[in-house]
Length: 439
Image (cartoon, one colour):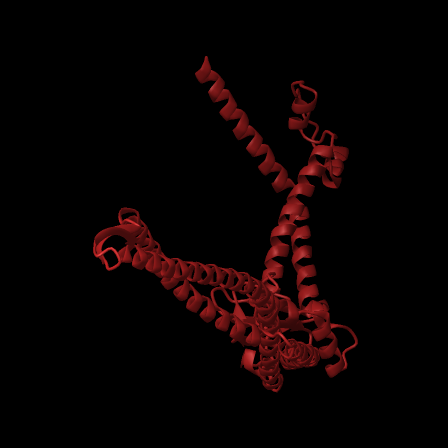
């Protein structure tokens, strides 16, 4: 059953294809006429109506280009800022193409060649892949004018870049000169403040010298105190030994003396000389000890006074040294800034004299007037017209056929009425009518 359906579908497709071929054969005159008219119309437009368009190309080499746009660091670094302002601008390839097609360049070309309108719509600029080459293509009905526009565009673009560089460098020079003047005034003020600070009665140098002298005195009194404390300990030890000896030594002693009055030897008591000697030595040691104690106490007092004075001097010196360092640092910073601005100003003035247009962009190939137009492409237009005319005529034939519901052939009867054809009436002409009339 499936095989029968498949055979029937194939037969229907063959029948449909035959129907379409029959329609195309039936409408062949219409198809031919429309196709020929399309080709003739395209030929007339291409050869006689459409103006010829000529192209001229010039090739530019970009010698100073970067992969991405350079930016200034946002950290407020003065050196980076000054370097960025004194640097010759380096643009990306896309930036060069944008500048090349800008309205400013178009207006310069228009004014230079005295054109009635801007040539922007006639210009196409592209970057060659993986290179620093920019291809500029100019289309125009006049081949010489197309070449003139291309060459003028290149020269005006180079001149515009140089002018922009001059303007930027002039702004940079003015900025750095103004900043240099401000910095010099600030440096003069900072220098005067530093001189005034150093000329104060108790300046950093005076305090340092006084602190050095106090430190030396402190060291000297510390040495004297150490020596006096050792001597004091020695005196205390000697006094202690004398006191021990005095305790064990009797104050009086018994002696035998001959009494002349009595005429005999009698016993008597006398002060012990050793005891007396020990008392004298003890008194001497006590006096020396008291003197040494007074010396130690006095030295300690002087040392404490020196320590207090040194602490006060150090605090005062630290504050003034901090102030002096701040003033010196500010003066040094301003002096470095002044030198940097002076150096960069000189460099910028040198850069200002450079013709950036001729150094960053080089015309590798100037435009030449073309001898043959690129548009219209006559053969291609006629071929396209042939294809489009054939397609349109076939579509028109099919539409007319499907819209025609009249019956003209026995096949139309069977197709539209679904009735069998029983007979045909032949077409009668003049000869057949004469024949039948004579009989």
